[in-house]
Image 1 (cartoon, one colour):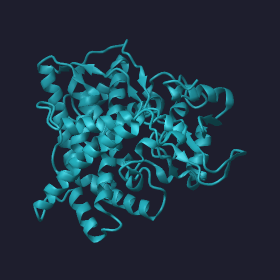
Image 2 (cartoon, helix red, strand yellow):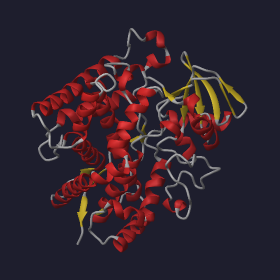
Image 3 (spheres, one colour):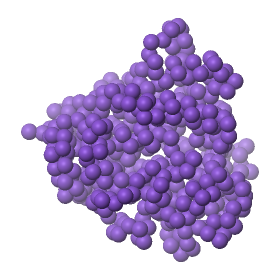
Image 4 (cartoon, one colour):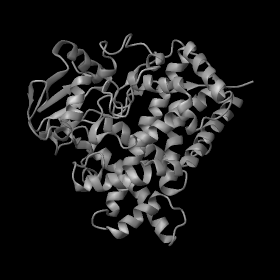
Length: 443
């Protein structure tokens, strides 16, 4: 009954059994939340009881569960690491200081598309956005690019990050039947161990390369991490910050690039939306110009396109699954301690009691409507809510509209109203068939 599209099949089950369901999945009991009001209960009112993320068996390797910000319980170590990340990467001051890097990477993306347009070649939008974000994160941490679309440098690193995302998303029998843990019947843990070994070895080489330089003038995140490691070797070991760096690559590339790809696909198949967005961009920015972050607030329709993409194609359809730490009562139901909990953000985005024409892509529904994505409006929670809200939210809300707006404003695109919009379920909700389209240079 669950099948390959669990976000859809569980949403259908909720139509019959209600927004709070308890399912027996294998040996595990799983609480499924499918409405905004129920999500508010578990992510805000009873936040602490649901604050620990579920540990997938395939990721219980190489100290990942010990150091990953996404998997740490809410304790002093989690607070310490989260403070480091927030203050050095996602604070307003840090984001302003790194704005020039994001501008540069978006310019490189537009240049790549321009060259493809000159040659009448297709651009894989998702892959191009993924490379842009990979290099952006690499520059924030290591002050260097990892990949070049023209000579395929950094191919190994890009592939291993992609393989981690693919294998982490596969349903694992061990998660449903823990007694199979030692057998690893699908070999997912073995493969994931191999992926982690490769990427951690690459990161170790980069760290050693930096240490061999002596005093660094980069003032990037690696310098910050090395300094904190030097001052607090027990609390912030090298293993800890290598896993933290890996977290940034896993969380910061696929989710954002997938959102840009879905947004482009929806705009391309809706000519009236394309025309309206181009009209706004030309009026506010000027035709053929790259969008800057300060422009976003002046582009309400572009922001509506991003919100509507989050509603219809949430990057993490089940957010990150949680464990129930304490027995708690939610809407009159007693939720037992020790079970798993998922919030079906996709189902909430399809709720017909909240959204008219919920299956239609209609950015205008957000015009003049005070609905934000920062975890306060539970009808739209692509980043989650509460103390475990995605820490990368401030960066994503700057990056996605700038990339999307720049792609729309610098090229015309072949419109395809019959585009295949089939989804592939995983940690992120991806397009099953990549969006590949030729950029048409402006006259």
